[in-house]
Picture (cartoon, protein in one colour):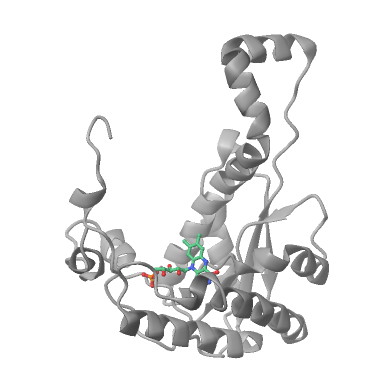
Length: 243
Ligand SMILES: Cc1cc2nc3c(=O)[nH]c(=O)nc-3n(C[C@H](O)[C@H](O)[C@H](O)COP(=O)(O)O)c2cc1C
């Protein structure tokens, strides 16, 4: 895989109207400060709720922040998270990304950090997976189906399983928010750095202790330009029939 293949603009796609939307849906960190009407925000959450969840359990909740005072309280928390990221993992460009492209991305990240209090809308998707039901009979089948080694591995990876199960139930809705925002002329970007201080964010927003947060999505009218996303070519990522 070369830099040219990864960072070449994707060719303009043929296909349904959704395709050009997906192919040009870049993370937009520069937002205008104009408010977003409540009805439009409702459309975004409706799009999220149209997403699937495991067993159609729909244990998601969406915290939507538009209050300037609340956003002003969150802004210093966001700055601490961004600064921690930029001083560590974000210190250098990811492998293969040209320094100039990374410098532009860091400039946008810093812009968003420094203007976070002006973010028109912040959406925090949450999920709380129900406790698994284990009665004696069920446990016996569970143990027999997985086998001793499988059971041991399952016990060892329970935390990861739970996190992935909840994430899998909430991220389809997150992607729908991004697509709906783009379709409505809005801009957004998924962020997860708030997880570095998740307890503080939850406290500031009154999110219950046992409920997990999965992203913080700033939304507003775009101040920058959309354009083709830069992604690896399909032929580079597909393994037909086996790896
Ligand atoms: C799961 C996930 C987490 C992300 N977390 C952050 C984040 O915390 N902060 C941020 O500025 N961007 C974040 N991003 C945005 C990505 O950096 C961005 O989508 C990627 O660099 C590709 O750029 P593009 O979407 O403009 O093509 C995240 C994206 C995803 C999918």
